[in-house]
Amino acid sequence: MKTFAFNGYERVSIQSLFYSIKNNFTYEFLTKPEAMHQIDKESSEGCSGIQGQKYVISPEHGQHENEAGVGVSIGINGVSVYEHSENYLPATSVYPAFFDDWVHVAVVYNNKTPSIYINGQFVKTGVTSLKENVFASGVFGGHNPYGFFVGQLKYIRLWDHSRTEEQIKESISQDLIGNEQGLFGYWNFDNQSFSELITNDDVVSVRDHRDGILFVMNQLGGGTELYQNTYIEKIKDQYKVYKLMFQSDSYLFEDINEENYSHILIKSLDLTQKKFINLLNSLNIKLIYVNHLISFQVYEIMDLIQYSGIEYNYFIHDFYCACPRVNLIDKNGIYCNNEVGVSKCQNCMNNFQNISIETWRQRFLSFLLGAHKVIAPSYSTKEIIKKYYPGVSIDVHEHSVSSTIKNTNKSIFAKNKILNIAFIGYIHKIKGSRILYQMMKIIRMKNLPIRIIVIGRTDMHDKFISDDKKFIVTGKYDNTEISELLAKHKISLVISSSVCPETYSYTTSEALLSGYPVITFNIGAPAERVRKLGGGWILEKVNSSSIINLLIKLLDNRNEIIQKANNLRK
View 1 (cartoon, rainbow, N blue to C red):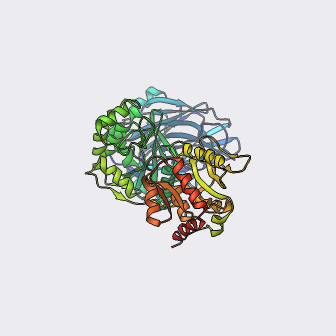
View 2: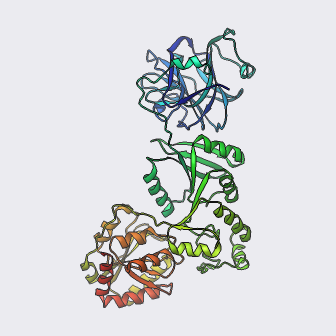
View 3: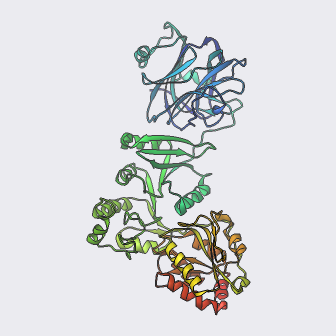
């Protein structure tokens, strides 16, 4: 089938508006969109159509305030009808969908009310225009600067009346002669001579030919999302970036390459392997970056990715691939010390989810072996995962931290009469909140000259200052300001109190790079980093008493704190 490929800058100008075609008319076109467009809220007022659109029919400006020109924007995520006049460019009919192949679209205006038909089937009626007259536009391919169509187009037909569903169905596959009753215009884009009408006057945009990367991610936030957003910021000029998330029973694809994100929402039951592959091809995806699979239907998404034919990387942000409990905390709430025995793990799992741990690990083994790269942010994480999957090759790449991090520690902080110690971030149970509050009780009971400052919040306090001012919870903070915040509170050292292995721990790295020694337990990435830099203390016993005993020792030996801080200046 001969067609014309619109690359995001071409347009065809037959006539701005057809003033004899108004209020009751029909557009039909056969197209294969190849990019997302912005989906706006349906309305009869406003100017939502000024950005993020892919106008296959340009909404040309009405000559008078009570007149509007009609335009149609289409992307792989749906089709929308717009009307354009003075301070007026609303979406008067919006139909979100997923077009992974050729699609026939009809927009029927009946008494100034637009309806949309897809492949001959009625799908949507919009809102009635408030303008006195709405006119058909004769400009195809885009509107500068509001957006240009990207995809293939075979024809556009314009009828001078409101066609019925039956009439639309009858003519979808017909090659028209051009003199059919009521046919006002028929522009066949498979005609080679038609290219002479294509212009790009005054157009500054060009089609984006960058390869696409799809990030598979949940919406739980934390360090995983911070890593992803930092990485995206680094590569966004080199690649087009898309996100894939899971909401309830649907897959959410987001195009984040424009100021206002476009998206596609596809029901899980509707996303076949073929549709998934077609979507990846439409977005020019060359790499899938699996950041996390929590909240997804795990086996389903792994199959979609693994059999897509697209290279994929898997990043180990936690231990989900080894255990659905994620953090290797057993049914008693205790770190399981990387238990690998199937029977013991299944017994633990029976109190959590109805999952066969043997099947879980078999499926993940296949998925990890099929990955282009499996990446861990620390060697301790690699060692733990290797216990479960010894045959999987794992690269180690540490996360980067904010460029605003700098050494702000001063020796005088360690010599203050009251020793200020900090916990950083959101301190919940797994991060050691029980240890924190037990420490506070012991400090008060022993009347120790120690003040605990949580730069962040806990699972018991969002913000708090005790009467004796020995316990302070500052509340949410900007992590780019952590170096200054540590200095502001005259912190002597930081405690990283996670009761199970962390794969990285941004807060530990931020503290060390800001020049503040860290006390941590001998599990996971924090201990690995403290050991590497010589910037702190590593404790074997995971409890509050071991930390308190060390702090009592340091109260009488402040120079040891200063020496550890000096190690971080090297």
